[in-house]
Image (cartoon, rainbow over all chains, first blue to last red; front, side, top):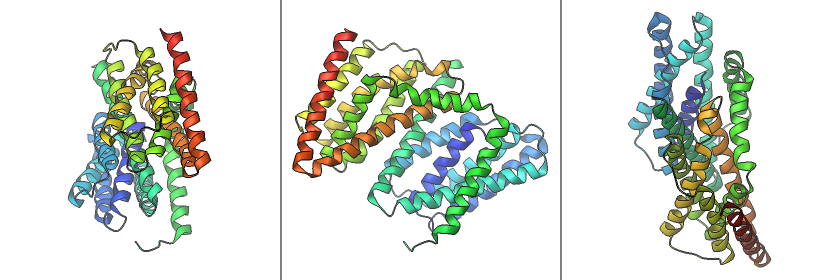
Length: 156
Length: 200
């Protein structure tokens, strides 16, 4: 998994955990479905590096986490699905000519990562300092993604 | 929220972390990602002017209490990214080192003086200085082996310095602690004066 994909995955986990594990179950499913679709498309030869799109998602999602509002669940589902699809396309491109088992492993690992991360972030919501930590982590992710987007823009 | 079973989910989190780390280890050179992160992580920690200003942000946040407690550490990295973007794009910012030294004087000074301005003033002041700190970090970014890892490294290090400042600032719960925190602010402001004489 590329650093951009890892950043997007962490942001999705924070966003869903902030919304609450129960409320965001559908978004986790949307992530998993889009991820599998992205990997399947990549396996069929339609993959590619989508670092910029993943960084844009990470920056936007990180800002949403930092703002800490109760965002509408369809918005969270859309972000989760977009990130899942992007991570799928990117993971297959990263692996070169991926084996089916490699793709399946990537799918399972990314889904476990989002589910576990969302659960941890959801657990943190139960305490005031936990809510602060999640928002601070969101701002870190957004800041890092914005900087790299600026660098990519500078390099043309 | 109902209590969730801790042990199976904690095991799941650990398993996921290992599973996600394995492809990283296979697909990338350790030096590229790890080196980029460590280089970025070390950047704010190796400059005392950055360290004391970040501690002051945390101290002031703790001094002001909620919502400044979380707002300042959230505003700082986001505006710092904007300053970093200016550095990356090659937009010159005059007197960056002087701005960083002044940030230590001003932020240390407000802690020492136990100033409690309106929240938006505090956020604006912190945001203003974040631009200078971000610009200084951002100019190093194009040389990084892994720019994202470098960015994450220096943003996380900056945030951890804020959290350290907040932790120290929690001493304000006790009367003697308030004096100690104000003393730390005064020390930071004095160090800022020293940095300013070197930068000017």
